[in-house]
Length: 197
Image (tube, rainbow, N blue to C red):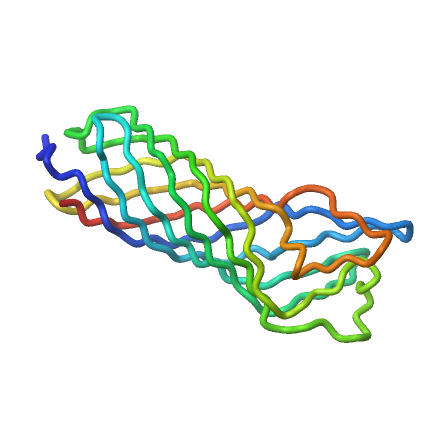
């Protein structure tokens, strides 16, 4: 048993994620537009305000810039993504249990940043031109996880999160005749440690 009065949690996590990217099509064919699999680091601050329901603010930094792929040709640029969101956590066990599986759902914003500009000779520019700027898009989040408290004030947690957001249109600038199909799906497993108080 643990002290139920310890309702707050602050921690850090790291992992490695991958994407299911949308496509851009025009009469000449199609290209995959999105982001490559890369590492992730982040922080979380949460409150277990009810016996089975809690909430947390999460920050996540994702390495990797925008890229286009088509027919074996690739155009990839430097960049990164910052995510800030709030999730509700629905625990399957009470606060005084050491092991607490949970479901998570929430929303936030994803800040995409590209730090380069494609060459004027980019062979995939007829699908989209990738520009050097920052673009903010809404994000929907969902996931599952488990927390294990192995000391009075310390717990380990495993999260598997999925983030859904539109492709950043200001970074992927499509010419007339090109059309974007789908959203960016970001899958991120995370391992973390938290201090509870």
